[in-house]
Amino acid sequence: MDLETVLEYTKEAITALDPEWRYTEVNHSAELLLRRKRADLLGRSHWEVFPELMNTPAETQLRYAAENGVSVKFEQFVPSLYGWHEVRAVPIENGMILFSRDISERIRMLRDEAVRAEIRNIIEQAPIAIAIMRGKEHRLEIQNLMFQQLVGGRNLEGLTVRNAFAELEGQGFFELLDQVYIQHFRD
Image 1 (cartoon, helix red, strand yellow):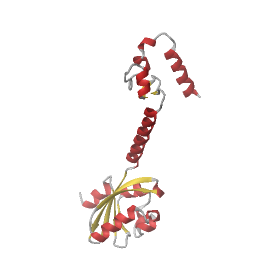
Image 2 (cartoon, rainbow, N blue to C red):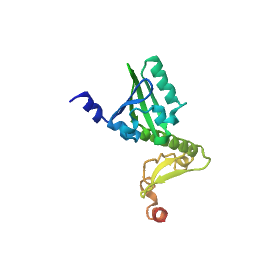
Image 3 (cartoon, rainbow, N blue to C red):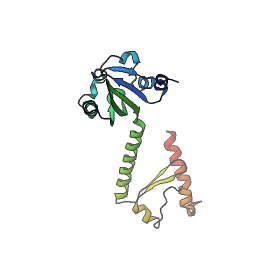
Image 4 (spheres, helix red, strand yellow):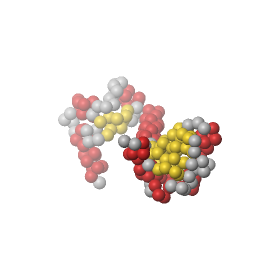
């Protein structure tokens, strides 16, 4: 197998730029990542194709790599692609090779984690007892300190309400929760 075949079939998006920032090579994965055909990229300037990257950290990093002959790695949101890319820029004798991949899902997960942590923090600081349940089995997902004190200091996170409060069986409480759940997800 020759190098050209390997580059064409690797999952990583690989592009080559000449000293004037024009695309000279574009592999299949790069076509998919950049949502443009190879023929529409070859010979065109990177800054012409992605003008929204001018005056961003991506431009700063790429120009630094080119001027200093050093490899750089950075993450950049590309508005026209509505995605986050991780880029490794490696200067070569006649330009630069860019190794890129979509990291949008990882960024979304990090942001979701940050939002969950902030929600948890707000709930924990609330001056009332709060417990959040999820799913049809009413699994306790979050509880604050006041709720924990209300239930005798027990940490019930991860338990279903039926398991956490088995002593309530037969009093209609679980059935009421089931009705609320069904009503909420039916409408």
